[in-house]
Length: 231
Figure 1 (tube, helix red, strand yellow):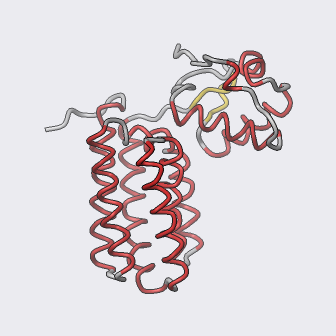
Figure 2: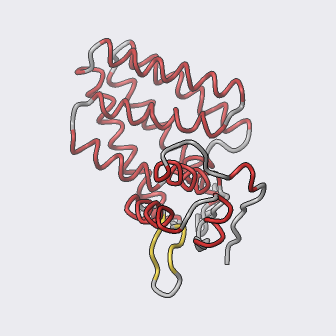
Figure 3: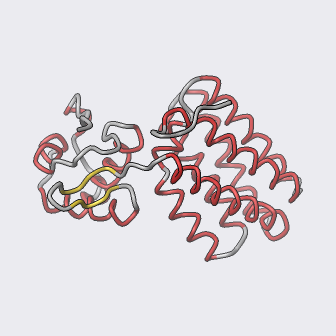
């Protein structure tokens, strides 16, 4: 069974934030960063002790994570961090790629200047996190950029499907930035994205997003069980 890393309890305790939201964010971050690895059972007693919270709000947070697809509730085992196989990950990334290409092309045609400026502000914030090598903060803004570009397409159905898949792949997308070379390449692709969006070039933005999401699979495939070896 996969082991849960709950080292340094002082760093894990919940303080000041609204309790349910704080627990949810903390557990989600622990899944993203791998402290709660795929296949790990969420031991309510152990986690509650480490976070300094009671079981009732903890159970509510776990149920919410299950609704997001990050956790699954398994009979006789309880809550377990969701583990995705290679084909599942590849298929979801392929759908996200197609959705973002369509959204990017629409965004170039439909977005107003203020909407594009918001993406630029997120991009600059992401670069600041990158300069500090703050991976988790970088990752969260990075994902907000992808969500924001999709939102500029002004298509609720597209946004809803994209959000569901993006949530399920949080841990997978995070490991795509492991290593200086992979991380630098992802940042360079985002630089191209923002330039294409600001110039309102739908074909260019669709091409960059497609390449970025295809490379996302290449960056994570070696860490996914069952993935074929790269050529």
